[in-house]
Image (cartoon, rainbow, N blue to C red; front, side):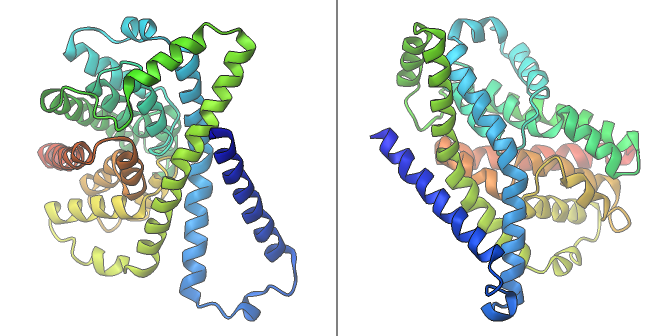
Length: 332
């Protein structure tokens, strides 16, 4: 049944690709002949750009998730994550920083980790720091702000402090793993796979990665459609006009980060374009909040976790990011 389901989805993607190629290479299909409104063409361009930016990192994420599912046992994770909750939070945030995944690609990784026995609060540490302070994001921030090391270090340092605080709050508020799927069944399946020959285990890894991709892919597409709609039909200038004062401007930039749903590897270049309009604190709100929480990864998280947990996490992330940035503003 699973193979037939995947085959149907693959055929659908192939047919969609063929249709795109026909339209692209056929001279009869021109913009003038289609009579499409300019706003719809803009919507299509933004949607495709979000999708093209995110898919490579989602692919990285699902393959890492496949490796975790097949080759990483609960014993490995128990040795990796300290039993002390405070040390577990710190460790998860630092390890998450080493994963070169965007906010979309990290979701399937975290789901697999939590399903294999990693505590929820440690999974949140991975979820927040992976897209925010991995080496690729730090370097892109450094380049986007004209080789300004201060901005890159502020993003990395404050992002790490904020992530640790959020994971700590989640540790206090939630005890269970909050996954929609049954953790026990996933762990038992992994235990069975681990006893198979290496060839079958590699095959199982690819099967899990493919399943994960199609599972996460539809929610990525839904999020990209919503983000493209907002970018096309919501006036950014009118929103920016509301940002007077440090509190309002920081909230505005955080709101833009959520709605624009940019990939964390590229968002620094957008933030840099606002540096003549907003103070550094507000720009940091954009740079830190976006990788932690945006429109498309909210939808992906709601597909993985219980809705109540996602809503609480959104409130906690928003409150901690805003609170820390306003606290440190006099020294930035």
